[in-house]
Image (tube, rainbow, N blue to C red):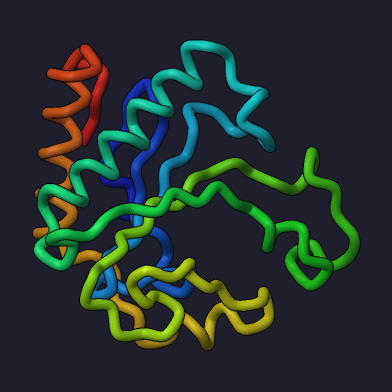
Length: 173
């Protein structure tokens, strides 16, 4: 299965690499939304790019809430990040500056009322590991399944076309 689920004027909706999962599917699921072009900070996007990125983010979150049984009576957390890219131990090793090394993306994290992991307890802020612990921490996390991903994409496409008037021809599944 391709990590890219949907491409459109708002950017790309993707499954994160399994080694970089922040939330397992049974705890609520994890998707990533990349903007329509590589920038280090959202203010670098022009008006239309930012608007369409916002549409894609909103459609992805709503699709997760509406299609994932584990999110029944749950919600979504949206987390804009790229902090680990600035860690001195991240490639390339050494000091880094945001403008050169940070690549904007947004994590769409499902919050299940039945989450059992301490880091994802309902009613608490999620907790993320330090850079050095990220792969160990994510070991055993499961990505969204192919069927879950297909349902999310179908719902997101419907939302983008009906609510936000994105032409169906501008979307690639």
